[in-house]
Image (cartoon, rainbow, N blue to C red):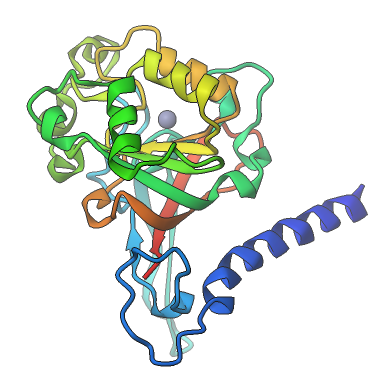
Length: 286
Ligand SMILES: [Zn+2]
């Protein structure tokens, strides 16, 4: 059993190295000329490519679902010790679902993967961004539609690529951490759920993605993949039942092109977790 575990982790590790090597192996541009991302044969080493941090910082301002326990950081020690060296350490506590985090399939689908069971291959790889911010910023109840997804495909004259990670940009991360502007209310508790207003993915579009496209994961720059006024969280159920994890409360999507980048999304590896805090970055092809 232990041997098998080790082999699995070696295999996963090799997949990660392979991904990172894409940039290194293809760094065959001797002149080092600028490649503006129109060429899919990216020419720069990983260390020379633009990396965009898509995670919010955890702090006392971190936004949580209105019923979830918020982030706390307690100082254990910070200062000079009697032995002459400096030492700092803290304890922290948090709900799984708050700040930039991942929803594991089991969050809305019984017996599905927990956060530690999601294959790393689903969380790293080619990504696209679908920008609906020009419409969504005018309507906090906006539902991203099949037409929005088809419009991306028409703009780029290609289908949403197989195995891609799809990021949805509503523009709402610019309001974070102002709860009223970001999610419609600063109230907390069960009664506050009905006061939530922010855009999300329509259940019809979630179904369309599952039935007609083949994506690895999905992310959005609002608190939830379902819009704030959702009662039955249908997009969660549809996506997570089909093993498609969701990244929520993303930021800085405006710094990404609509295609030509990779995503690496590594959640805290909580055994049995229904979700977890997530460090997610985009690596641009240039
Ligand atoms: Zn969540």
